[in-house]
Length: 144
Image 1: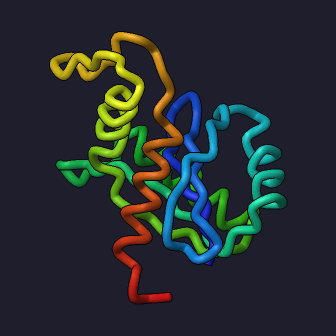
Image 2: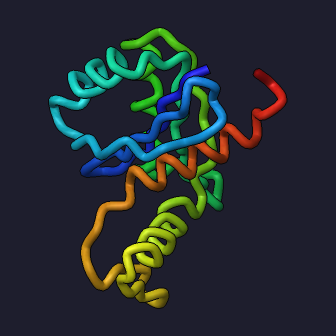
Image 3: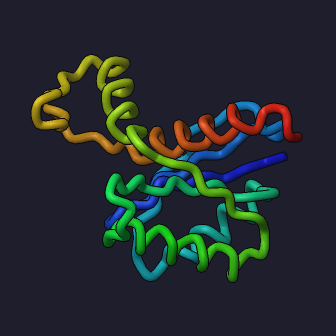
């Protein structure tokens, strides 16, 4: 099975894709959260031909909905209505932080753990989407 995963943000969404067998996740890029979002997604789906989507859902410790969770829930509903393929939700807890640490380690840039910010600005949204997808794939390894 082929999957496309998303790390939904307020300004941009990170995208990752799986291999055809659904075993490995790869960062695919970043799409701005603007009026052209679904045009970009239709083109991506035309190229990748996914069997399903995976969306990272923010974990709210209190269980109450916040703006981020509402935005992700709307994105999931829009995916379901526009594409008609399954949408799986995965807890995204820690994926952006982990992606920043990994990317900065590989690129040799310094990461300030106190402020959770990179000293140099880089986008890690697609790496976070790949971590979300890999988390999903690992949890569903025996279900294919």
